[in-house]
Amino acid sequence: MTAPAYTPRSTTGTLPHGVPRTRHATESDREFLRTLFADTLSPFYNGDHIAHADRVLDAHLAAGRDKFGHFSLSQRTFVLCAGEGQDATRLGVLHLVVKRQGTVKISPLILVPEQRSRSGLGTALLGVAEDFAREAGARQLYCTVAAANTAALGFFLGHGFVLAGGAPGQYKPGVTEYMLYKDVPTVPTAPGREAAADGEGDAGENLRVRLFRPEDAQGLRDLILRTMPEAYRGVDGDWVDALVAGHNRRHAADVNNKFKIIYVAVDEAGTVRGVAAAGPKKGEPVKLMPLCADSPALLGGLLDQLPRLFAGLGRKLYSHLPPDPAITARMQSSGWSLEGLLPAAYHPDTCTVQWGLFLPSAQSRSGEAHD
Image (cartoon, rainbow, N blue to C red; front, side, top):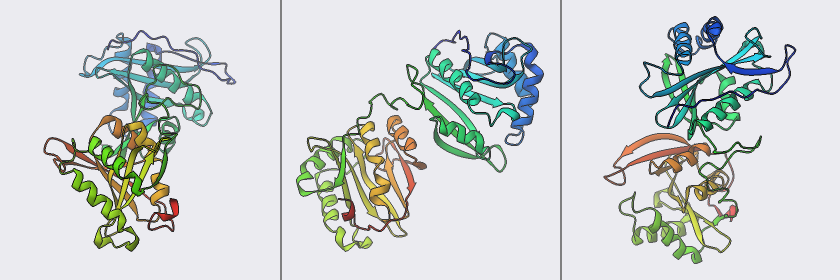
């Protein structure tokens, strides 16, 4: 990955001062950056924000080279202005860091206070970031946002960023820092339409998710034995038989008998392509095991149905899955939270991720209402 030679595009929209434009930062912007960084970042981050502003501008003015950053390949700073020329009123700043691992970090994106409620300016700057990341050949755009900065958090989540997790006290005691990311499409997407997360398109849209039937037994066995043994020791034909037996005990709804409720995702030909088996536990969590599908895209189609299918069965769902990047992206984009990383829990050579999702309440307790 090489540092990009990038010319910012003009933003759209009309202001009393003129048409907003994005340009490369210059030395004349130093005091503006210092003031904006210090005033905006101080409530959420400790540290010397004036020095931070100087460092990012110095890297930008040095042709993007950060002499202190080990993973930084290039850094660029853009200023949003109300019109052309160095004298145009400054409206905001965007600083981008190209990383050696093929990602681009937004660090930061800030509008001046009086423009933060103006529709379109933040979106315009984010569009510059996405164009820049795409031209840099990056696969992912990411940032971190303080949980207390609800406006910024809502902005990024509303523009397709996915919440990866939170780190309490990361940059300031008592303040949790959220980590967010967004995949960079290879071509620009139309407004309001996001590209498929892993290039597989809407593969899950033709699946029907329904309660397991006896005629699904062979397809269920084939799917489980095809997708699970590599990451879960002990998953074999006997394990599948015990799973089906637990499903057949579901009418008693006795947690102590470890009953299961199995839903399968079937395609138009009736082939079993995904499975989610719920096992209610004492204290009303619900473990999903197995939770698997033929591909991450198909898993995504199944995940979309689970809150409806298992509402009222317990307080929350949780599942144990391999730390696969595509699966992780699907779980996060569906609103699941990473709750733990378990070394050698199911296999001596791999870790297992525990994912959790809180459920809405509902009346069904046995799954029959949704067949």
